[in-house]
Length: 360
Image (cartoon, rainbow, N blue to C red; front, side):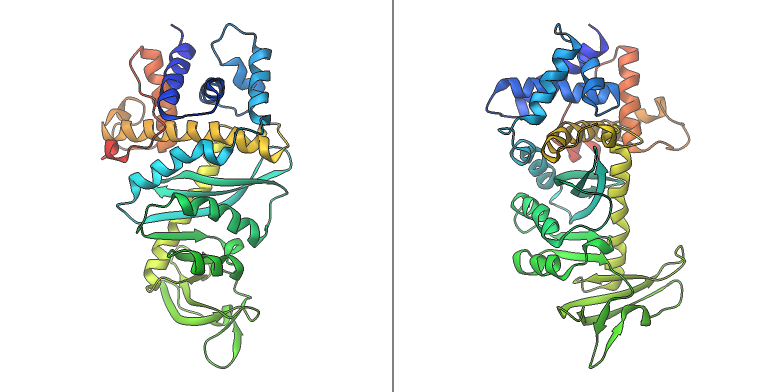
C-alpha cells in the first residue's frame, strides 16, 4: 500500500467515526481534501487532487473538491462544530484563553479567526471569511464570529478573550459584557481618550518606567461610549515603548500575562500559510468556498498538532529533531513525524478529536 493510500484510508476511517454528514459522499470528499493538504502541503485544489490515491483521474477529483466547497448544503459551522466543541470541552478544566485576529486567505478575502490557546499553539474554533483587504473590519463582524463561539463554551468555564487594537471597539466589548461572563484583555491605541475623574485625557499621558506596569481601575473608555473598564499601562523590558491594555480582569499583571498569549494566533496563521499549508494561495475568491476549504485545513492542522504533541510526550521527537533540545515547533514535529513513520513503514494515528490527556 502506498503512503498516500495509508494516509487517506486512515483519515477516511476516522472521519466516518467522528463526523455525521447528510451525505456520506461529503465525508469521502473531505477525507480526500485533508489527505491532499497534508501530503501536498498546499491548500490548492489542483495540488490537493494530485495527492489523492483514487482510481478517478486527478481532474475528476479536483472537480469533486470544487463541488464540495461550492455546495450550499455544507454548513461550515455545523460540520466543524463537533471538533470545536470537543476541543473546548477537553480543555475546560483550565481557563479557556481565546485569541482573535484576521489574515488574508485566497484572492481578495480575509478570515477572522477565533481559537483557543494550548501550550505554544492556537487551536481553531470558529471563523468568518469575507471580501476585503488587510486592515480593520467592523465591530459587527467581530461580534458575528464570537456568536459562533459562545454556544460551544462549556458551562461555568473561565474564559479570557484576547485581541490587538483592532478589537477594542466598545460595541464588541459591550456585547462581551452583556452576553457573556468572559474576561477580556485587549491592546488599545494610546490616542484614545479615557476619563479617570473629571477630565478626559489621552491614554498616552499615562506612563510608567520600563519594566513596570500600572493599572488604573474603572476608567471611562472612549468619549463616545464611556465604557467602564480597567486601563493597564505596561512597559515590558523587551518592548521599546509602553503597551496599553483595556481589561475587566481585576489584576494588571494577569491582564499582561494573558495578553502575551495572543501571539499564538499569529503563529497559527504562519502554520496555515508560509510554514505549512499555504492557505493564502488557494486561488479561491469566494468567501463561502474558502470557509469550506478551511474545514479541511483546520482538521489537518489539529491532526498535525496532535502528532507533534504525541512525539514530545513520548520523547520520540529525538528521532526527528536534536537530541539535546527541541528546536522544531509542535506543528513541524507533527509534519516531520508523519513523514518519518511513512518512510520507516511504522504505524501512525489519525485523530481530529483533540485529546490533551494523551499529551501529558
